[in-house]
Image (cartoon, rainbow, N blue to C red; front, top):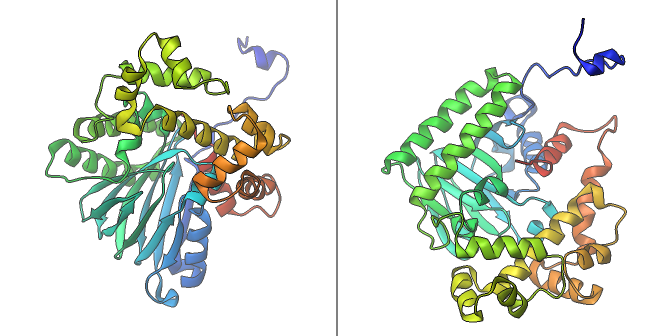
Length: 356
């Protein structure tokens, strides 16, 4: 006799897919032009790409896997310029952390004003809530795309990770690099249940190593710290337009001077509140669940006192209006379930739907 309550009412069992969802691009198979176009469309929410050499000579071999709570991939590519602008930050709906191991090649660039130079063997971290611009040589890398929540469980504020470069002369970094290469080798053979376990292990090892070696004053502090306690309170009250420094100090029973000191490493408490509101609003604009809500309604929901104030602050931060920002998301979700949906469009939605 079956003990499955769903079976008793005739519901068919849910079959788990036989393999981990995968997306691949190879210029060897589709040609240089199509390889460059497919890669550019697939990663367009992360960065815009531009070929450094002749587009007709471009070569790419990409394989990426969806592990449920994160994504990982291997990339072998000709030299490229990568650009994540403030406008793309607002349009993409991505608030993830990008971790890359450069197996071969490297790049030079800047991460929101921080000079970045990556050589073979280095691990580099980018915060997708902030802009960056890089130019690579021909390269091979292994990348992880990890929802921010995995990091906020360990760090007070992951902003200090943006543009951080770690060398394998640090033993734990070498262990992380060896693990990522082993994961890339084994993942094509994993079952979905194995992939979920791999995601948990990968997040745990990655955040542990970064906490050990990150040199920012905003990371490596105890999770339950004065900063984290205040940040959690801000998140609880972020939708209240009356939340400001004075209100926060009163509700936390601390002085304004204490708040200013605690938040000084991340640009100040008022700046932190504004950034959380803007990031939350940008993510909400990109969320298909909010397609029937106006941009003004989303602005009010995230603590802005008027549509004018929301538009002005959003444009000052991202260089475009909330209305323009949500148009990219509308295009992405319009193809969901359509017969002519492309593999690149599915890949874009995988990234947008990542949750811990």
